[in-house]
Image 1 (cartoon, rainbow, N blue to C red):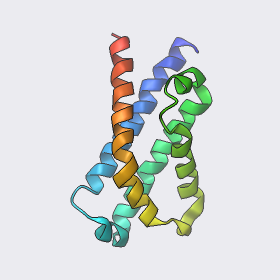
Image 2: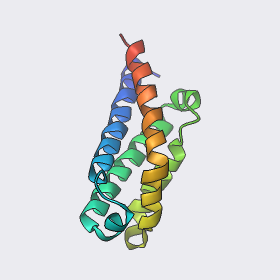
Image 3: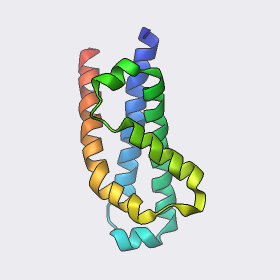
Length: 124
């Protein structure tokens, strides 16, 4: 991996963190019932899940060593969800999306923040 390629890793992690921040902002003051009926929030969340998945895909395809080092992060699952959203069109199960937001994204945020902070500290 070249130095230029390695510099892209923090960019992809920043994209994931920003998308997570936006998702949590969009659902901050709502519950599942509101989420399941609010198409605007659903669309905003889906768009940011796509961003997360695309950034994860770039890491998987171009940064093997990095992915192996952080194999406990569900990189492939992020991309799988992005594909399901992008190609599922009107067959998306928003109850599953809500459960993902509630159950999976908080831990993902902690993982990605930790990795990002470690990488940034190493680059000083």
